[in-house]
Length: 108
Image (cartoon, rainbow, N blue to C red; front, side, top):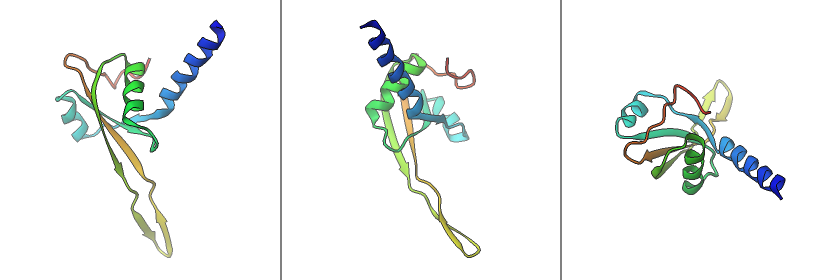
C-alpha cells in the first residue's frame, strides 16, 4: 500500500514538472514581479486549477489567483514556403502577500 502511495505521489510530481514548461523572464515579467506576480509558459491543455496546484507543489508557495492567456501562432512565409508558428499559453500567477519565487535559483 505504501509503495502505491509513493508511486502516485511521484507520478503527480512528474505531472507538475510537465505542466509548467518554463518561466518567462522579460522586462514586463520583471515589472510584474514587483506586484508579486510570476509569469510561466504552460502546456496548452493546462487549467487554472492545475497550474495553481503545480506552482504550490513545486515552489512551496501559496497562490492567490491564476490568469491565463493563449497566443495563437502566426502564419509566416519564407520564400515559397508557408508555415505556422506554434500556439503558446502563458500563466500569470499572483502570489499571496509575503510569498515570493526566486527564479534564478531554479526548482529544488
